[in-house]
Length: 489
Image 1 (tube, rainbow, N blue to C red):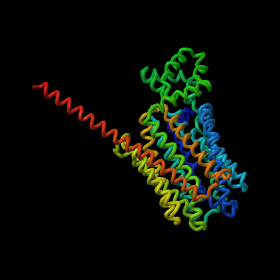
Image 2: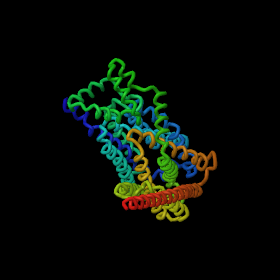
Image 3: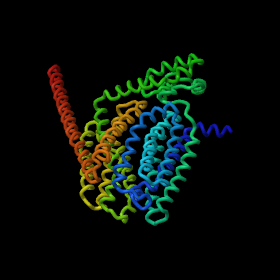
């Protein structure tokens, strides 16, 4: 029994379980073949129904539940929402397998919107159960395992379809089994004793901290630093509040848990402080705009592929294309960590230039009329986005304390989703313009062209300004040197 308790208290235990959950919940063999499945004999839906009536529901539902899920995640201490996410994923797959009508498929998209909104619980859980010094490793494991799951799912789907080993319906049943494994893993996750906002300090935590102080020699400053890193998003004043709570054991739990109004107020204060940095604001604007365009492209690219090559012969390669693009994107993002470029000076120019290449790839994808060109340009576009979003994350992280990552990244994602909802409601939804797929992609390519022009101009301005300041500094240093030489004589 003692060994079991020791194992569950080690950081590797929750990290391993979360990775098991992340892997099995992202292995989706049918995802690269979703359009052929929906428009084929299994569901008998038209491309227009899928494109203009079904897929837009995901965007709307994602936006509508993102903020409530974010707050509930903290209030319910992560694990509950992780389990709920897996249950909703199971329901999504079951609806996809056993229903056929347009309203049923729209319900499927709503459920999947809840699943994607609940990702905040997956990425936040690990920070509430591991020490600050383990953040980097735990984050690396939990994020990379998801990429591995998507890649394995794409490869597995490609093999199953290429060799005709399973029908689409049987692949969905197989996916339900994988999701059930993920559900078991999520139920075994230990319940965190604290969260960032609502549960800053719970009963019994004081005793364990005092015990840790006695064993370690009790460096009071280190204890405060460790405690602050695990409470609110950057609220340095919470340390004093927690010290007062420790002095009064009877009122500890009451003072430790923040009310909803206090949480909202603290969020707003942190939000204003973070975005007071103009540099961070520019990078965040690019993040929101580019992520919006990227999501639209990825969501509807299979519809474009079907338009370019209507027969079913080439759709069997979708899984291989997704797997290759995922791996190359991961390699591109990983390689950024080894570059020595001064991104604070050249970053905005890079955002504009590479966004322009992404726009060119989208235009070529739209007008080429060749499925292999579409596959190649899609891979290039995806790699460019992953490269740039990695640079943006690095630069934003450089201006932030560890506690505010979730707030800024979440706010940027919300901004991207808001833009995506506007574009979907105007361009895609059958209740508005309801454009066919080719005009849609012309708009997406033009959208990235606008991003490119804006950030190229901004980047050129920043580089010229930096060069001018450098020259002025050199001139000033030269004058100071001359004055020093005159004083010597």
